[in-house]
Image (cartoon, rainbow, N blue to C red; front, side, top):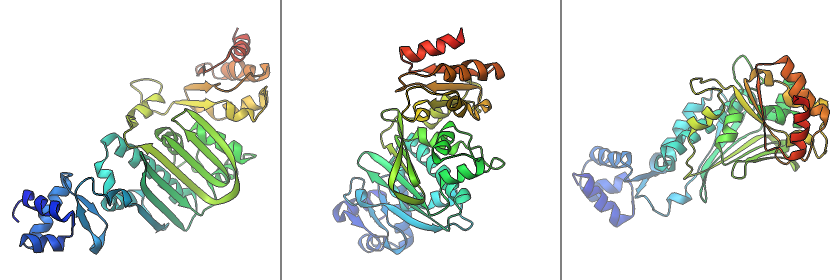
Length: 339
């Protein structure tokens, strides 16, 4: 066996093969066999499964490919997210078979969520699971730490987990402002098809397949924080497009635009108060453009509209506030205070 074509013929007969078996079948040195098989892996013609002494090689489409997952528990001591990501890429071959735009989304999202767990959770161990779930690429980051919602509550002096979730969805919310911009959860939740954040008694679910957000009370508490990220393996999303959506101009690279779903502040009420409007706008002075989504909000109180579209606007006249998905009742109330 002196060529890659000969190696592929051997593999086609065996279906799966180890380096040792390739040496025996091809009658070549282990060094030569390793060189040939590595070249085929780089070209995507052969898939490497497993790690260490248990590595086998198969062709794309082999039934064992769908059975393989990466699952590992890491001690949170001098842990680096890029090193974890590199180990996943070495051991979980599926990533190399995916389109570049999907790999970019995966790399960014996992790095951000793992970094959050490393630096904020105070958890001794962090567990990572990566796999496939039908048409989705999936990862889970699980820690046993202080909990993302409780952490934000304590550091920012908020009254409830709900307020912490509301702030996290705005972007630029972090418990370590000197070291972090707070953008990770904001952009990761938008890059996903489905993004879930569970911590103690609450679950935040962002479902971009239907463009909606849900906050649920869990029956049983999840200790620490669990992040579940799903993206379609054939998605046409590009990470650069997601970033561009939240910048004020085509020549700017700053994160200056945010989008708020007003329904998360109504909590089942029909009219929304001035105090709730203040909660909506808290921290938004950091953005140049603010998009307020009124989808599924039946109506709002005049005080709510006045607080945002007159009071806040008077204090920050250069800020751009855009209201979208308004029904006639909401549009009427906003129109009254804008006159």
